[in-house]
Length: 611
Picture (tube, rainbow, N blue to C red):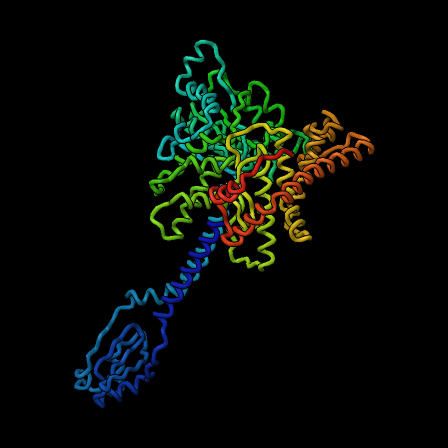
């Protein structure tokens, strides 16, 4: 399409140039006077002619009054003889300057060739464009099955394990792959089989692509990169052809790495959609399976694939001999997050008192990509403020922007709405500070961010991978803090607690049906999650219990909510003075940081409670 547009543009430009040339050569001029030969003879006798130019049968006459005239003569007879026959004397002829030009001059031939050949040239040019476009289309048809491989070699884009922060276990698992790429003979001599495929599993942004490039960088080998979606086209057989071309190219460049990103685009379980075994995506998958089986024992090509949906992959991909090595990439812990922040802070002007450890504490659950985005947002914020360096506050503000969205200070609130929001967030913060074992409050704000009218930011003191029933009960009470605070202080409730109630209801139902934390229902899970296969895979929950059990589940969910509600009401009613102090400060300053909030709460010497 780009080539066709370019050709049309050149054709238009050429046409404009030719038109301009014609307008120059054939610009309208004042027409000379046409004389007969006898009139020319009369003017010569009257001494009115200064010069006569003869070109073939054309006669150009230059008069002494600076005007010009034209005439014609007989082809066989000379002009002077013709003029003498018309009575022009020799004396009169001697006073005229005669100039005879040959008919074979440049202008003569141009006057003949341009009108006849130029149209043919223009027509031929357009035919050339058409044939060139047809030829391009034919060449594209013959190369349609070629793989669109992105090749990264050991140049300036080389990535090493030192450029990947954290992921210690994953990198340790991949060191063997790197060692094989460097010293394959050591493994082959002892009879070890080359690992055919490595599957990187992890959440989005955990660094799967970066780690794959680091394998190639450490092994100092070429790195062929393709996305799973690039194999599949609307024409049957193209995907299989591209797979064959990819593996043939890689074998010629061995030792090397083939990296297939988002392999779930073509590696889904076969039979998962309409089209049976002739579906184009399934044929592409079949070809990948065949190519990986076709690797000889000493083939120095390793296939690395990445996905964040291992549950949908076909079993044949995961069997031994194909992707038999699976490396799981976890979200970084606090130490890894600090290292990731250090890497992404390179090239950025940070303040001398910058504490990246504190930033790592505020970012639990952030992936490597999230942290990279966080540092970029902080740099943008500092530049917008016309600062020369990025300070701690810029990064902390960017944390909230990444979590909740940008501030919406332009959202005007009435005094009544501002008061309701202040008491709502103060309720969340007070319940959090009052419950034993709850995470500490880092910030409370009534400034709208994203879709939230206000927010209470609480973060754990340390990394946790398990949660207990008491922690879940604390979470339920905290979620209801804003709802209860509004009801007690204003004798009415607003829509601001709708999301809190939805999250609390889902959490209470999970306690009963998934985690077995209900004493009445016992350690039983209710509801069977199945993957329905039709036009892809969908998660559906099958009801595998009776209507009586369903009623008991609903009653138990309500009991959990009521239990949390009673604990929240007890805290709000018994500590109303603390609630008022927090709300008043919020209406005054709109935002309370951890130190300011802690100072208010410590003044009342609160005793921790248990739900």
